[in-house]
Image (tube, rainbow, N blue to C red; front, side, top):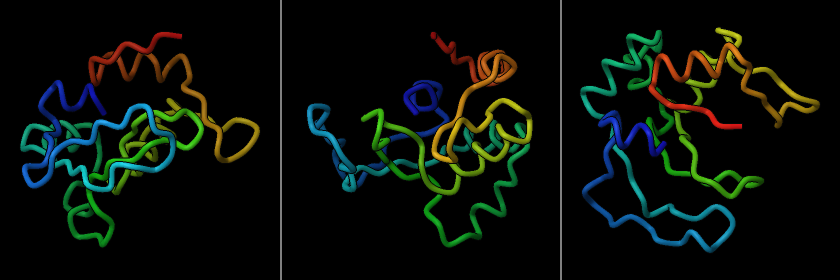
Length: 122
């Protein structure tokens, strides 16, 4: 999510301040909002995501969320789900021993670096 903010694909919402609760575990941050930028819409559409379909859905497009196991921020909402689906379609992600565990493949590491300029460090 930070890379998408840094690249201008997402921006912090104007209505509420960003939370500073990095020391607190759990699902916090409901007051944080994020918006998709025009550049983000273009980039994700070029990546093969139907942005019109996402906009018509009932699910929030972009939502702030903290992963329950890693205690790190991740992209949630319709866009996060669409990206995950696309990553699976491209074989960039594979399921682990349970459906809650996923692994980024070597192809995925290269794809994320090439497509989104994000280096994955093991």
